[in-house]
Length: 265
Image 1 (cartoon, rainbow, N blue to C red):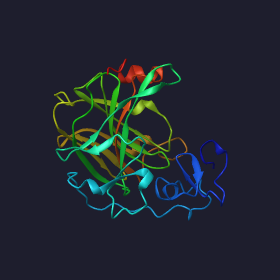
Image 2 (image 1 turned 135 degrees about the vertical axis):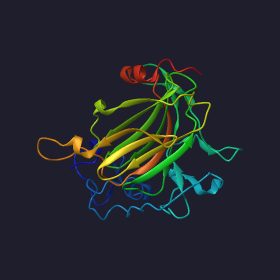
Image 3 (image 1 turned 90 degrees about the vertical axis):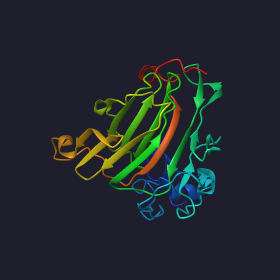
């Protein structure tokens, strides 16, 4: 076991492993803390469990930044992960995620957009999550996402890529293994950046269903992920809901080909 590139578990002075780094700061121990690679299982704060929840983003005070999040999941429903913070509640009472052009070139020699991720403060382990949203598919390269993700790397995805504004893609991952063979494409029937649609992830111990406007478009079964050793590569860990926008068009070649390139500004 090791925390990121550290090559070992965290020590008692920086006990909490989060995002591949060890630290004693509150946000490391309260947010996406990985107990397996922390100093001990008790180093991480208890994960607040799922409750029935609905928001229309009418109260901007219910969202904070990760930098200012104090672990109080009853006070805050959501936090914005990155600085500078490109997530806000707009004048129409809607959650808006922006992406702004960076000022420094990336390793591919391109200027790349800096987006936003908003995360629910509670965890879910099975259940149903629905979002009514427009994608940011206004240009090739722009990626929008609605996912569930665990600190250990289990993930269930809806993703929109800018080069295909009338479709959405579904995928799932297990334990941070980047297996790209499980993706699927689904036609929405309209430009997803111009019309609101309902997208649902329905997750149970035995299967995942993806729904568009309350119609099932795909089902993945746990039984179909069985390995030769009898194990199953199927998401089963406590996860948080996230909404994101990021620039896939100006980065690595494979990602740019998938998302569309170049990203237009």
